[in-house]
Length: 165
Image (cartoon, rainbow, N blue to C red; front, side, top):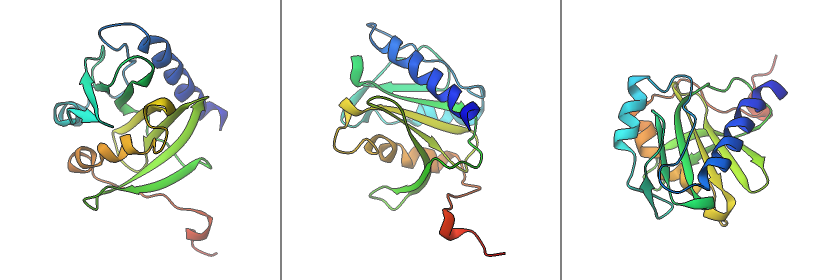
């Protein structure tokens, strides 16, 4: 379990340090950022997330919105999560599109949403300061572009969803 959290914590830490600089947001690329689906997602990513404008990033397969400590970052091509005891939830946007996300608070005031059951996987880092009332709003803003490009092959299940033996 700890092993699966280390890359997320490291990525969130790198993004936090890099967001303070001006200009291009320094973002580490996911291991599968060169997947052609990631290029499609980056090209189709919305011009705004949480009402913040899109800004330039340093790595392939990445997009960011906002500035300074309020920057929201999306990385395509991250390692798909396997079974986990972390919170897995289905978020539905206003158009009825549903995406399953693993949700972690990776450091004080920072949430990491990682798609579940889709490859390549996508993670979205959302500072609490960017959306104090609903940090999931960033994930919801990206639902259409994700669903349009990456088919769901698995879904979140909870203890009550498992078949009885």
